[in-house]
Amino acid sequence: MHKILILGAGRIGTSMAALLQGTGEYQVTIGDVNPAALAAFDVPGVQTRAVDSTDAHALAEAMKGQGAVVGAGPFAVNVHIADAARTYGLDYYDVTEDVAVTNRVRHLAQGASTAFVPQCGLAPGVISIVAHDLASQFDSLRELRLRVGALPKYPANGLGYNLTWSTEGLINEYLNPCDVIMDSHRVAVPPMEGLEHFAINGVEYEAFTTSGGVGSLCETYEGQVETLTYKTIRFPGHCAAMRLILEDLNLKSRRGLLKEILEGAIPQTRQDVVVVFVTATGFQKGRLMQTSFARSISGQMVGEREFSAIELTTAAAACAVIDLKNSNHLPQTGFVRQEDVSLPAFLANRFGKVYA
Image (tube, rainbow, N blue to C red; front, side, top):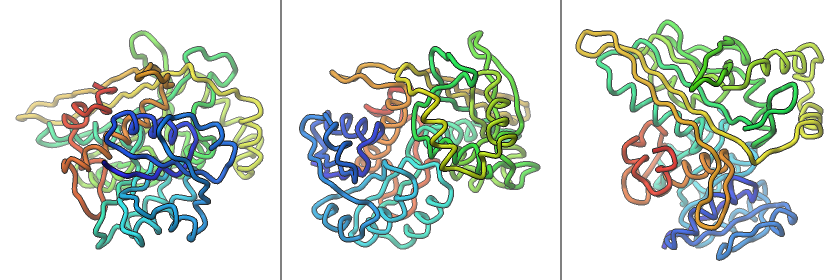
């Protein structure tokens, strides 16, 4: 029985708890600083406890007897969780897209006797696993194009968007610098640039640069690929509308107010779809070739629980990585990249098969 502590009783933490507990092979405890979140928690068999993830003593108490911990709350608290995981000898996982947090986790992982596996979600996460697998099929790489979007099935406002996950994470993506590779060198470019349009199965989309989704791929592939870009997929018109809000109204400099406005004006939805589109171009046996991985995933029932698309794709990805580490398919100590995860093993996993 694997004992695991999930810190954050929001949508992703709750979804992970349900998936892991449902196997009968994990003993899950979920912690949160918010009493209302714990009161609303509804996964049978999972223990709950009040935990302030910024309090070193509270973390120490919560981690007693646990084998692993998952940071599933706001990205800023993950540095405290990772610090405690190193101190008390737990495997560490998170679903963050924040670059600074991941850099801190990388530092903590040096010489660790346990595994530190950040960015176990959709993007970064699955997108990195897929990109690495496609890249491995080429003798030399020219381009890796990574495109991901969590979208409402029925857009009904000027942004063509509903909130489907963390508002803080969304703002981070839209405002922080973006890692890319250009001319074989890793560089940072502004967010919400490089607007492009394309269609998948007759549905029109746009995509633009956002921060964090590329994970550690730019570090891995610098000097090995001419161009690597990550962009977020939205419905046409979203980028222009958000630029008005961020630039013309200058809300990019008032993140707290921006969050308040977005959460007050844009409803959440559970009727969503996740679009994943990765393309690799390069040479195979002297010929210029291209191969792609495309998925469109909707919410669905797992057991007796209904998951939205973003809940399912993010939680299942993280649970698959945890499963693969526990079955010795991943390095057991130190910093583990998402690129270290085998795509065939991931897709064959009981959680990863969501993407199969």
